[in-house]
Length: 453
Image 1 (cartoon, rainbow, N blue to C red):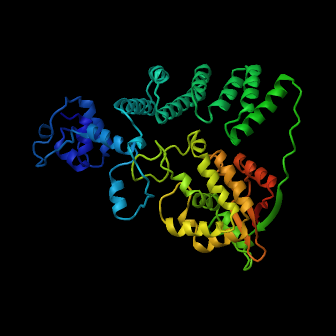
Image 2 (cartoon, rainbow, N blue to C red):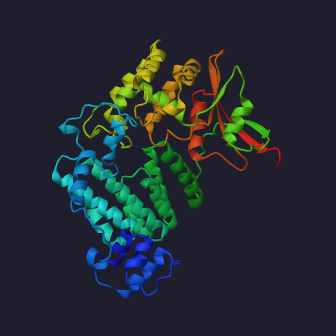
Image 3 (cartoon, one colour):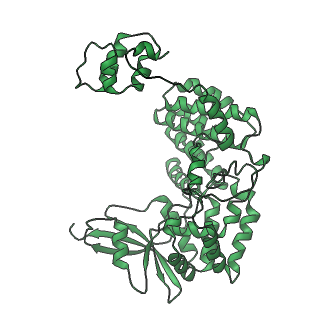
């Protein structure tokens, strides 16, 4: 039995005009307008044949969709991937690292895990469809599971709902959900909500407590700002912050390009035969990290790989990702102390070329660029950058400078952050510049103005 909406979805506009019992059959109307006519008639659901007795077509309905989705969930551990993965892999369009997968690798260990996943998914869909949050929050707060994967999904949904409540001014309820969420941004959002509620003293105590064990560099930066702001509000003695490292700045006046970005314009302007400039942004250092630490990233730990079509471990952004593999990453980083580490990275490049990876950008890393990078970037800088990445893989892989200039004859390099007219440094870029200054990494910030302006 099909409703008017369902039959209209199946038919083309000309078929709706021909076969539906419309009072106004003007062809100039849009299909949506024709559907409004059908809705206004309030016709009861009918079979396809009853709706279109003169249409010589047959309608087939898939009745096992729910079962197929459950099987797909059991295999992939999510409902974002589908069976086309098999086809794309067979065609060679996607190639994946081979990882040993056993029963302990499965994302779900029992039927209840599947039911819990589908329960959380239905709650998320309800939120996206605008359902009343009062009906969604109680079952979401009551949810519990011993599966870390499912708990992380619950935390993400709690954070998402809390953001909605905060935006709509329901601050007390938003605060409650932020406090219940383990999402990486939930703690500093609590501080902001407490400030909006006028509970500055409580916000200050909370920020002070959180700042003792910051979850990430980003959170540490935000908490530092909150403490400064709250000290001023509460009339407390201001703690003198260490002076931030001053940026090395260059200013350029360039002709406005007819095409391409400001980064490309600066690249072309600074380009020299003996000092080539490359537009790499976040791709180069991440790729070198991915090649050196390939074995640690793709280690077959329980719950990391559910099936053969993973571009990276499922727990990549979980809080304990590094802790679970700390000894493996330590072994990888120790290779930078060996004289043959360059050969190791180049051999890994040849061996793994084209395989899906969450860090290696094959399209941006040809052999010539790899050779230049290994020739000019010292091992100590690589070690420092990779260690920083491991502190927060999600946040610290962004904010790196746009360009890199190699000086191969001198075995050195510099990185260049480009800012066009009216642009300014973002928080993650400031953190990166501070880190670079601390470790002696040469970085300049290039501010561009257009000559025509």
